[in-house]
Image (cartoon, rainbow, N blue to C red; front, side, top):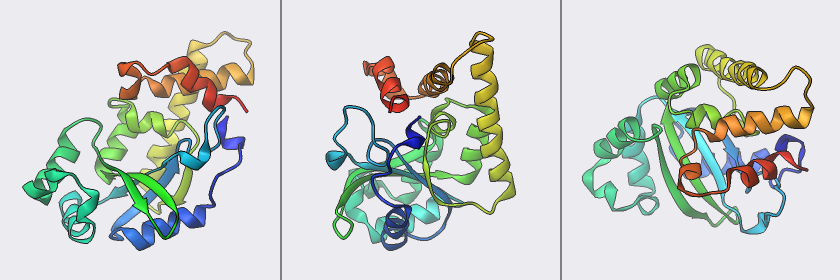
Length: 210
């Protein structure tokens, strides 16, 4: 899978972006996608770096981040940090994203999202909407490891569940490629991009093929 492919930028770059750009009240973070891992037919020089991190207190985090990085947000910030946090917690996949954010000192453009720790644990254990759990079935570059035992257990449980589900869907005799394709296809079941016309099979093969 994509985890065997060359990483476009070293993890220390992603760590520096997190440390220099955002409030430091987060405990787990990862980068992912075609801006991090090479994918077949993709021009890595033009791809955004996608990042997701967890926070304990969403309102407090958005309050500080809006003060620090107001231009990262849409006009929604004018409704206040509590509104932004409520939208994060209660709409969609419980992740609030800001995208097309230029990080000039790193020479990259990023899309970053933040999710509350409690929501992430719930999504990993229950596969609620499968967006976050599905993203973590595929290769990611962990840029801040968690010391939270409950979150670590939930991350492992999510991977074990994906393996068990894929094996139930496959015949007794299977190839590694078939297994990887099934895992990636399973994760895209929770990706809203697949609902709006993106070629699922093509997307999956880009991840799996060298």
